[in-house]
Amino acid sequence: MTDPHLPDTSAITALLLAGGRGSRMGGVDKGLQNYHGTPLALHALMRLQQQTLAPSEVMINANRNLAAYESFGVDVWPDSLPDFAGPLAGFLTGLERCETPLLLTLPCDVPNFPLSLCERLAQALQAQDADIAMAAAPEDDGQLRTQPVFCLLRASLLESLVRFTHEGGRKIDAWTAQHRQVVVPFNLPGDDPRAFANANTLSELRALEQHR
Image 1: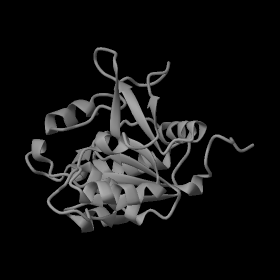
Image 2: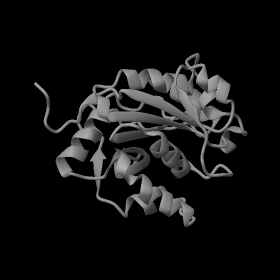
Image 3: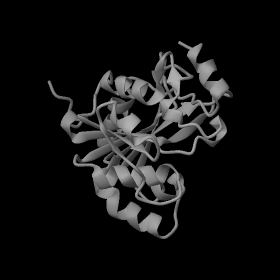
Image 4: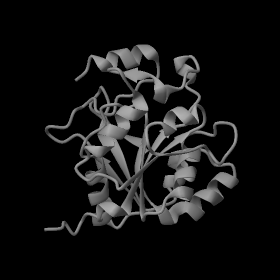
Protein backbone atom coordinates (compact mmCIF):
# COMPACT_ATOMS: atom_id res chain seq x y z
CA MET A 1 0.00 0.00 0.00
CA THR A 2 1.35 3.43 -0.97
CA ASP A 3 2.19 5.80 1.88
CA PRO A 4 0.19 9.00 1.32
CA HIS A 5 2.96 10.99 2.98
CA LEU A 6 5.56 9.89 0.43
CA PRO A 7 5.92 10.97 -3.20
CA ASP A 8 6.28 8.42 -5.95
CA THR A 9 9.95 7.51 -6.39
CA SER A 10 9.79 8.88 -9.93
CA ALA A 11 9.23 12.32 -8.41
CA ILE A 12 12.77 12.64 -7.02
CA THR A 13 16.10 13.45 -8.67
CA ALA A 14 19.27 13.31 -6.56
CA LEU A 15 22.14 15.77 -7.03
CA LEU A 16 25.57 14.86 -5.69
CA LEU A 17 27.62 17.97 -4.96
CA ALA A 18 31.27 17.52 -5.99
CA GLY A 19 32.05 20.97 -7.34
CA GLY A 20 34.25 22.43 -4.60
CA ARG A 21 37.89 23.44 -4.71
CA GLY A 22 38.96 20.85 -2.12
CA SER A 23 41.05 23.57 -0.48
CA ARG A 24 41.45 21.79 2.85
CA MET A 25 42.51 18.63 1.00
CA GLY A 26 45.33 20.48 -0.70
CA GLY A 27 43.31 21.30 -3.79
CA VAL A 28 42.63 17.71 -4.86
CA ASP A 29 39.27 16.80 -6.35
CA LYS A 30 37.51 15.54 -3.24
CA GLY A 31 34.92 13.36 -4.95
CA LEU A 32 37.64 11.31 -6.63
CA GLN A 33 39.53 10.48 -3.42
CA ASN A 34 39.27 6.83 -2.42
CA TYR A 35 37.18 5.61 0.48
CA HIS A 36 37.72 1.89 1.08
CA GLY A 37 39.11 1.69 -2.45
CA THR A 38 36.17 3.45 -4.13
CA PRO A 39 36.03 7.13 -5.14
CA LEU A 40 33.89 9.08 -2.68
CA ALA A 41 31.47 10.17 -5.39
CA LEU A 42 30.98 6.64 -6.68
CA HIS A 43 30.52 5.39 -3.11
CA ALA A 44 27.78 8.00 -2.63
CA LEU A 45 26.07 6.99 -5.87
CA MET A 46 25.96 3.37 -4.74
CA ARG A 47 24.60 4.44 -1.36
CA LEU A 48 21.86 6.43 -3.09
CA GLN A 49 20.79 3.23 -4.86
CA GLN A 50 20.32 1.61 -1.43
CA GLN A 51 18.00 4.31 -0.09
CA THR A 52 14.71 3.11 1.36
CA LEU A 53 13.15 5.62 -1.06
CA ALA A 54 15.63 5.62 -3.94
CA PRO A 55 15.60 8.62 -6.32
CA SER A 56 14.71 7.75 -9.90
CA GLU A 57 17.39 10.00 -11.40
CA VAL A 58 20.86 10.96 -10.20
CA MET A 59 23.29 13.59 -11.44
CA ILE A 60 26.60 15.04 -10.30
CA ASN A 61 27.62 18.68 -9.98
CA ALA A 62 31.37 18.91 -10.68
CA ASN A 63 33.69 21.59 -11.99
CA ARG A 64 36.83 19.54 -12.69
CA ASN A 65 37.65 16.12 -14.14
CA LEU A 66 34.22 15.87 -15.76
CA ALA A 67 35.17 12.78 -17.78
CA ALA A 68 36.14 10.92 -14.61
CA TYR A 69 32.75 11.68 -13.05
CA GLU A 70 30.92 10.80 -16.27
CA SER A 71 32.57 7.37 -16.13
CA PHE A 72 30.34 6.63 -13.12
CA GLY A 73 27.39 6.46 -15.53
CA VAL A 74 25.36 9.55 -14.61
CA ASP A 75 24.96 13.03 -16.06
CA VAL A 76 27.55 15.56 -14.86
CA TRP A 77 26.96 19.31 -14.87
CA PRO A 78 29.34 22.14 -13.88
CA ASP A 79 28.21 25.24 -12.02
CA SER A 80 26.29 27.75 -14.09
CA LEU A 81 27.81 30.45 -11.83
CA PRO A 82 31.52 31.32 -12.16
CA ASP A 83 34.44 31.04 -9.73
CA PHE A 84 33.48 28.05 -7.55
CA ALA A 85 30.54 29.92 -6.01
CA GLY A 86 29.80 27.27 -3.39
CA PRO A 87 27.08 24.66 -2.73
CA LEU A 88 24.24 27.03 -3.62
CA ALA A 89 25.67 27.23 -7.14
CA GLY A 90 25.30 23.46 -7.23
CA PHE A 91 21.70 23.75 -6.04
CA LEU A 92 21.06 26.17 -8.91
CA THR A 93 22.63 23.84 -11.46
CA GLY A 94 20.56 20.94 -10.13
CA LEU A 95 17.28 22.84 -10.20
CA GLU A 96 18.01 24.04 -13.74
CA ARG A 97 18.46 20.43 -14.88
CA CYS A 98 15.86 18.74 -12.67
CA GLU A 99 12.95 17.18 -14.57
CA THR A 100 11.13 15.81 -11.53
CA PRO A 101 9.04 17.68 -8.93
CA LEU A 102 11.66 17.19 -6.18
CA LEU A 103 15.45 17.52 -5.96
CA LEU A 104 17.52 15.83 -3.24
CA THR A 105 20.91 17.48 -2.64
CA LEU A 106 23.84 15.94 -0.79
CA PRO A 107 27.63 16.37 -0.69
CA CYS A 108 30.17 13.86 -1.92
CA ASP A 109 32.29 13.91 1.26
CA VAL A 110 29.87 12.31 3.76
CA PRO A 111 30.26 8.59 3.04
CA ASN A 112 27.97 7.26 5.78
CA PHE A 113 24.86 9.37 5.21
CA PRO A 114 21.70 7.54 6.36
CA LEU A 115 20.05 5.04 4.06
CA SER A 116 16.75 6.51 5.24
CA LEU A 117 17.75 10.05 4.20
CA CYS A 118 15.56 10.41 1.14
CA GLU A 119 12.51 8.74 2.69
CA ARG A 120 12.55 10.77 5.90
CA LEU A 121 13.08 14.09 4.14
CA ALA A 122 10.29 13.28 1.68
CA GLN A 123 7.89 12.21 4.42
CA ALA A 124 8.48 15.43 6.38
CA LEU A 125 8.18 17.60 3.27
CA GLN A 126 4.84 16.09 2.34
CA ALA A 127 3.46 15.97 5.88
CA GLN A 128 4.26 19.64 6.54
CA ASP A 129 3.46 20.82 2.99
CA ALA A 130 6.89 22.47 3.00
CA ASP A 131 9.04 23.71 0.13
CA ILE A 132 12.29 22.47 1.67
CA ALA A 133 13.15 19.63 4.06
CA MET A 134 16.59 19.92 5.69
CA ALA A 135 18.42 17.30 7.73
CA ALA A 136 19.72 17.99 11.25
CA ALA A 137 22.23 15.83 13.10
CA PRO A 138 23.73 15.80 16.61
CA GLU A 139 27.05 17.47 17.33
CA ASP A 140 29.60 16.05 19.78
CA ASP A 141 27.80 17.90 22.58
CA GLY A 142 24.51 16.25 21.62
CA GLN A 143 22.94 19.44 20.25
CA LEU A 144 21.21 19.22 16.89
CA ARG A 145 22.73 21.19 14.04
CA THR A 146 21.16 21.64 10.62
CA GLN A 147 22.95 20.12 7.64
CA PRO A 148 22.00 22.60 4.89
CA VAL A 149 23.61 20.70 2.03
CA PHE A 150 21.31 17.75 2.80
CA CYS A 151 18.03 19.10 1.45
CA LEU A 152 14.95 17.99 -0.41
CA LEU A 153 13.72 20.89 -2.54
CA ARG A 154 10.68 21.51 -4.67
CA ALA A 155 11.84 22.08 -8.24
CA SER A 156 9.46 25.04 -8.41
CA LEU A 157 12.00 26.99 -6.29
CA LEU A 158 14.23 27.52 -9.34
CA GLU A 159 12.97 31.04 -10.05
CA SER A 160 13.54 32.07 -6.44
CA LEU A 161 17.10 30.72 -6.44
CA VAL A 162 17.92 32.37 -9.77
CA ARG A 163 16.84 35.70 -8.34
CA PHE A 164 18.73 35.16 -5.05
CA THR A 165 22.01 34.19 -6.69
CA HIS A 166 21.82 36.88 -9.36
CA GLU A 167 21.54 39.41 -6.54
CA GLY A 168 24.79 38.04 -5.11
CA GLY A 169 23.39 35.65 -2.49
CA ARG A 170 25.62 32.66 -1.73
CA LYS A 171 24.58 31.37 1.70
CA ILE A 172 22.25 28.37 1.75
CA ASP A 173 20.58 29.29 5.05
CA ALA A 174 19.82 32.82 3.87
CA TRP A 175 17.98 31.45 0.84
CA THR A 176 16.17 28.55 2.50
CA ALA A 177 14.92 30.90 5.25
CA GLN A 178 12.81 32.64 2.61
CA HIS A 179 10.69 29.52 2.13
CA ARG A 180 8.58 27.09 4.10
CA GLN A 181 11.05 24.61 5.48
CA VAL A 182 10.96 21.70 7.86
CA VAL A 183 14.01 20.50 9.79
CA VAL A 184 14.25 16.71 10.01
CA PRO A 185 16.25 15.37 13.00
CA PHE A 186 18.40 12.28 12.54
CA ASN A 187 18.85 11.54 16.24
CA LEU A 188 16.33 8.77 16.72
CA PRO A 189 17.21 5.52 18.51
CA GLY A 190 19.22 3.48 16.07
CA ASP A 191 20.49 6.48 14.10
CA ASP A 192 24.27 6.59 13.70
CA PRO A 193 25.41 9.77 15.51
CA ARG A 194 28.32 10.03 13.05
CA ALA A 195 26.30 9.49 9.91
CA PHE A 196 26.82 13.09 8.80
CA ALA A 197 30.55 13.27 9.58
CA ASN A 198 32.37 14.70 6.58
CA ALA A 199 35.94 14.57 5.32
CA ASN A 200 37.45 18.02 4.87
CA THR A 201 41.02 16.71 4.95
CA LEU A 202 42.73 13.51 3.86
CA SER A 203 43.38 12.61 7.50
CA GLU A 204 39.66 12.99 8.27
CA LEU A 205 38.90 10.75 5.30
CA ARG A 206 41.26 8.07 6.63
CA ALA A 207 39.62 8.40 10.07
CA LEU A 208 36.18 7.88 8.55
CA GLU A 209 37.40 4.66 6.96
CA GLN A 210 37.90 3.32 10.49
CA HIS A 211 34.26 4.08 11.36
CA ARG A 212 31.90 1.38 10.17
